Length: 399
Image (cartoon, rainbow, N blue to C red):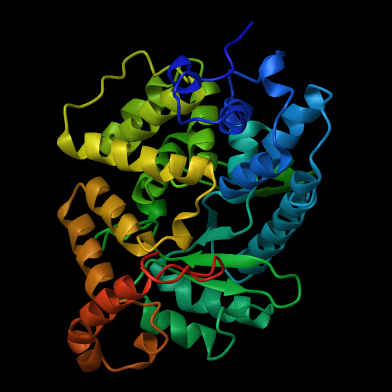
């Protein structure tokens, strides 16, 4: 009989049985065992934790497997058709862009669901992360605009907004007002200003989302490094990202050595090490045979802050609702940074924000002076958050 979660986690005095159950549901090697400790779960708490960490499908699947009733609060948050709708839209967008000579890459979403879990419905996701070459970004934006997509604010020429945003950020979020699908159009994967186009340095693969309909994500080793970088840069605020890492490791015949060594070669050592250490804590996932945690103060700080973020409020406290939301993510990005390009990108994100409504509509001279306006503005927001709760629908200024 397998253990429900990491033994250290199960014995921790501040970990609730509902949080332990959610961790067990997300663990690829340790599904919840049949015992009495899971018979009296509080449905509202379970739903809140599963929703906050975006692992609702895995929790619902585990409850059904154990023939337990689905709490109404959890059932209300479970939409089994949502991943299928996103996969259908991904296929449509791939066809649209390819027809105009643009070769997109799908970073996470439905392709990661297939590679990590073997089924689209098992991974909860909403956005489609679409990566194109920087030289294709403006043209891709125009095609997406013709297909009905608009900026989240709903106003302005999308292709022109992309042109103005590109020096300041790695992506732009857009939404289709009809089907409500959100797409993050990327021209870089990270904030690294020196990042080379993916097709120049990384292999791709093809994943079939429907019979006869395949789209290209990164090769699994490059995808693993990207998922680790993304999760660590956000202090692993969602268990879903750790579950992705654990699932990818579990599917490797060598126990994950290939993925770990590839992440090290891509200078994602701290990000990948934090993922492996945290997956061991929350899921009981064994580390790759050749894994050895670097003796790094930055790694220890990254893991400690990530644990606090994951466990905040018993697993129910959303980082986006805290007064530390932007600062926490900037701290994560700084701890993960491993090159001059990373640090330059971090500095750019701190001093100049592409998410400020007027930033993309100003001259370069104004942007050079923006830090004089932005830093006091950030400090003022920090003071205000001591006295109010940020709405969960607000996008982080530091995202």
